[in-house]
Image (cartoon, rainbow, N blue to C red; front, top):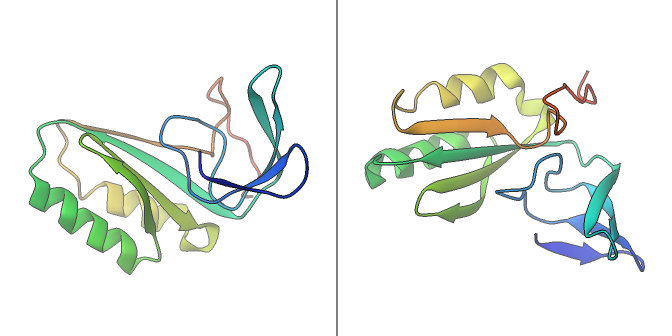
Length: 127
């Protein structure tokens, strides 16, 4: 996870993570070195989206990323089968979900990276 150290155990997350849930770019976190766990101290007003894909042509993914940037998103990370996006909360869930609907139905799974907790319950911090 890309971070900037703010204090001994406090960090600002610079890029939304691809495999860790509950955190997005801009969040301030406390990191416990002993338990190797982090918790959010302050939300950075961003929404992280993790998109896992398989068998999707590169031009489809590239076009999708361009559309994400057009609605104020940014690409925070990418692997062969993963794209991580960050959107300002002001972009709104309807716009984000409309963008996600442009992806093929098969071979794609996406999820919000910081809207639900580990148990799948809404965090409610955007309301």
